[in-house]
Length: 414
Image 1 (spheres, one colour):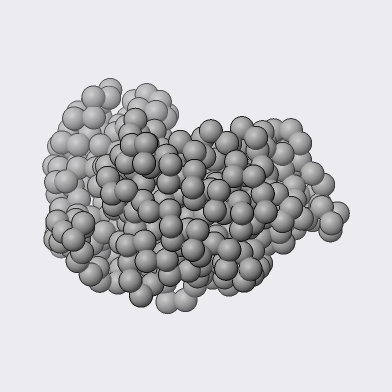
Image 2 (cartoon, rainbow, N blue to C red; image 1 turned 90 degrees about the vertical axis):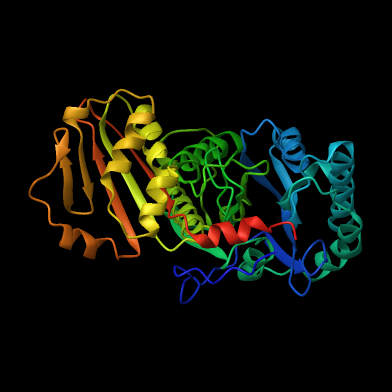
């Protein structure tokens, strides 16, 4: 597999991730695919945490996704086990057997029922997953799991990622603070809904499964389901949110019902954390050198606006133009037109950053090619499209398409 160069968006330093009461973490070099790096993560919840989840809409979902869906309704998690290097997808009955064996190994190590163990896998599709490394390492990992270690956890779940992805936020519930930490991975096969993307979020807030699920679903809509690197939806997409409830010991009230003012601050912080992680995923898109925000306004509805934004964001011609620092607005027009959504050619206006390049069905005679060329050299680009129809709007984040993407994916299995 080709060695990816460090993303130009890799952070100079990582956020200080506070411990989350009730969460302990451990990683190991299990040799599932990679040598000389960690590839197995165990998170333990003591006592069992409330859990919510959102998963891929792929009709070829991986075995761990099926497992998590089957146990999610119980609303409780004692452990999370994640491996990188093998997606355990399209592996037939062997895949389901490996999933069961992995959950049983974790249950023995942690001291819980297998159905309280959530699983996620990422990596190559179609290769059988050997559960032996799980059995060999999980007991030791459980014995040395510690409250810190979020950086190590984010590193262990990487595949073609060039940097670990983390974010932390503080929210207030009932006038008191709670913490939300998140880690994510994802570099290619990124497109709603969702991506070859795993994200795991931890909070000490006490939130019952129903409001927790509603909060996560809302956060995902405006973040992980609004990104695309290459237009390909993975078999393995998983976002899990764990709420330990430990903050009640500090007088933070428990939230038992969806809606209401009590969740407003938490929801805002969760939304922001998920957007942060989702944008980090795009900025580490395979071979990416540009980060682009696509804003569509004036559509007949928000759903229509999102379809148009994704049409632009997924266009190879738009993405290669970004890589070449070419403000080829004709390709944007093309992508708007092919989306199949209502649009009136003579009402559309297009901006690259502050520069209006097209207006009322033709090129804007006043724009400066020289100024636009200077703008396109920036690492972060905004494309604005106003359809001039109604008030529907949407934002999608994407990256450019470079030779690096081809190099990484041309020999991914080797």
